[in-house]
Image 1 (cartoon, each protein chain N blue to C red):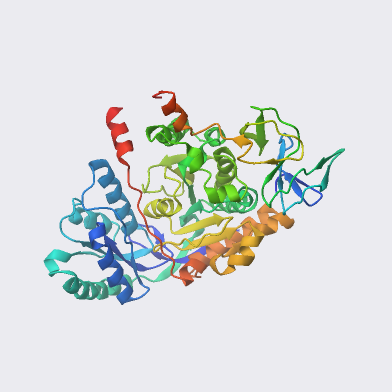
Image 2: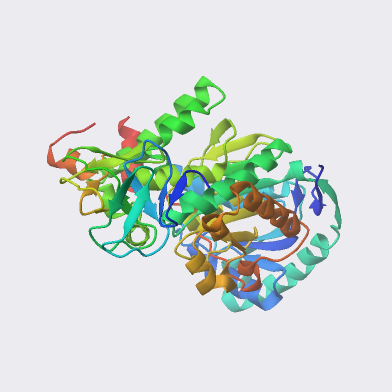
Length: 395
Length: 104
C-alpha cells in the first residue's frame, strides 16, 4: 500500500508539513523580542526563544549555531527572521546564509541597530509581513511518505511505556522505514543497559563502534561530575511509575525505535540523512532538548510517548502524544492524541502501530495535534557543559 | 503485547524473567497462578510495579525483558515487591568511582 500526503516542497527537495515563519534569536538577549514579535503576528509566526548566552566556548557555540541553522532549515519553515542584540559571538550573517541556502527567504534584525526593543518590535513586524508573503507562495502538493523524517521521543515514562506505547510507536517506525522514510530516536543516557541490543542491530562496524563510544561518554559524565546516576535516572517520577533502574528504563525506551537495522548515529542537531531507515541521534535525556535536536536535524513530525503524562510540544514540528497508561489517558486526554493503553486489554502492538501510522499521515496533511491546539511550544537547546569541554581538552 | 499475563494481574515479559509487572494495583494476599505454581503477594504492589516470581539472593540478578535490569541489594522472597529498596542498577555510578579515587 502506498501512502502519500500533501506537503510544502522546498527548493532543496525536502517537504514541510507546516509552513511557518520562524523567528529565531541568536541568544537569550533577543529571546523576549522574538516571542513578542511572533505573538503579535499570529500563529503562522513561530518563535524559538532559548536561554543560551551571547558568548559560549567554541564547541558549545558551534553546537548552538548548528541547532539554530537546522531549525531555520527545517522544511516546516517557509521563511525565517534571525534576531540578534548585536553583541553575540555567533556570526549572524553566516547563520542567515546557512538558512537561506535551504531555499527560503531569510532576514536579520539587530536590536541595537533598530534603536532598542520598541523599534525592533515595529521593524520586526514589518519584516514578518514580507516574510509571510514569501512563505505564502508555497502550496501543498503531493509527497510520498518516504519523504518523512519522523522523530520519536519519550518523556515521563513509566512501566507501561516499555510494554505498550514505545513498542507501538516502534511498529509505526517499522512501517515508515519499510516505506523508505527516515525514523530517528535519541536520548543516549537511555541506551545505557540496552546498548548491546542496539549494537547488534547496527549495519556496519563504524556505526557499532560509534554507538558504544557515545554510550560510554554519556555514562562517563556521571564520573566527570562525581554523581550517582540513580538520583536522576530513572527520575523520581519514573520510579513512582514502577521503573527501578536505568537498565529497565532503557530496555523499554529503545523499543520506540522499532525493530529494523540501525543505519547510523548523528550528532545533536545534525542533519538526518534522506531515505535512511532508522538512525540514532546522540542527545541528552532531557526531552525538550532532545526533541529540538531532532527538529534541527530535519524531523517534520515527532511522536512522543508518555506514561505519567506530558504536555510538551514544539514550535516548529507537530508533536503527537501517545500514552500506554490507561489512567493517564483518562486523566489527560486533552493533552494526548492516542491511547496505546489498549495493549494492556489485548489490542495488538501492530494494530496500535497502524493507528499511529495513520495519525502521522493525518498530521502530515495538516491535522493538528493536541499540543498544537494548545500552542504548547517548549524550546531549549542543549548546552555543552564545562566538564564535557574540559574532558575533551584532556583527551 | 509481548509476554504473558497471569490471572489478568501480572505480566511476565519473557520466560526467563524472575519478576512480573502488575497490570493493576494489587493487594497483599492475592494469589496469582503461574502455570503449575502460584505466587502470593506479601505486600501491596501498585500498578506497573514488579513482583518477584522467584526468590533472589543478595547480589542476584533481576531479569525483565529477558535481560538483567539490576542486582538485588537484599534477599528477596517470592511475592515481594521489587523496587529501589531491594534492587539497584549496576550502571552510571560516578559517585563510587570518585569515592574510590578511580579516574576511568
